[in-house]
Length: 139
Image (cartoon, rainbow, N blue to C red; front, top):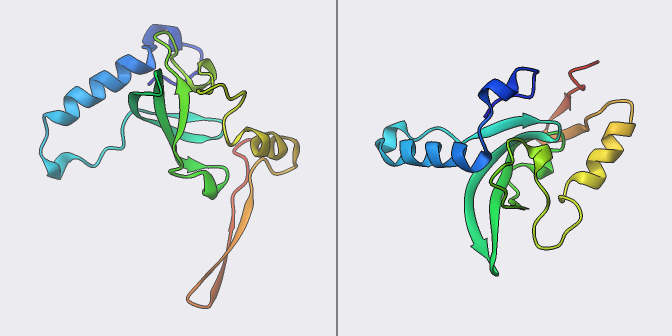
């Protein structure tokens, strides 16, 4: 999928088409070559991938997840957007099933208004304390 960098109108294709291209190519390769994660976009909440297009309770939806995120708890948590034949980027999508926002949006708004733009995380691994400090790329 194209990045929203100014010339995107020359390269933009709808998300559904990017997924169809990916799926057709994926079906034709052996298991050894199936290391790709699907069409993805580097959006503000993180790296969003289109995992599929399906129908749930009569509503056609995009199945999405985050490969990387500003909060690691968001990673690989599926979420759903209303299907759109014209959407080319995450900002073009609306939450499915009558929701007014995606699951991460409240916390993302807090991070936007904080001084860091991203969470700091402490993790303990084998009694060794690791501090993972990631700053917003604009800092």
